[in-house]
Length: 63
Ligand SMILES: [Zn+2]
Image (tube, rainbow, N blue to C red; front, side, top):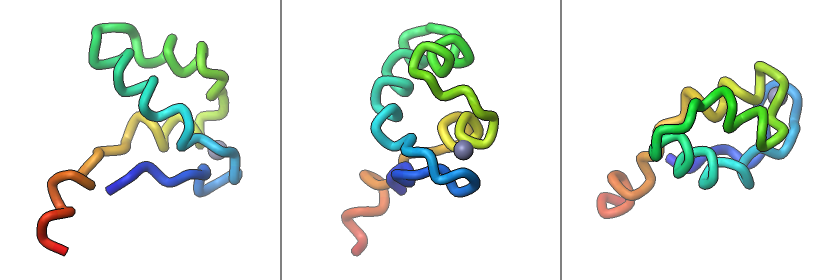
C-alpha cells in the first residue's frame, strides 16, 4: 500500500521523503546515503523506507 505518513515507532513524518528516496535509490544511488541526505537518521524511520513495498497501484483496481 502507500507508505505510512509517520514512523510507527517515533511518529516522525517520513511519508514526504518516500518518492525522492525511491527515485534516487532506483537510479543506482546508495540507499543509506540517500536517507542520510534526506535527514532520515533514526533506524526506526529508516526501516520504514527500506522495507516498504508500494502496492497501491496493484491493489487499487480490486477495491
Ligand atoms: Zn522513527
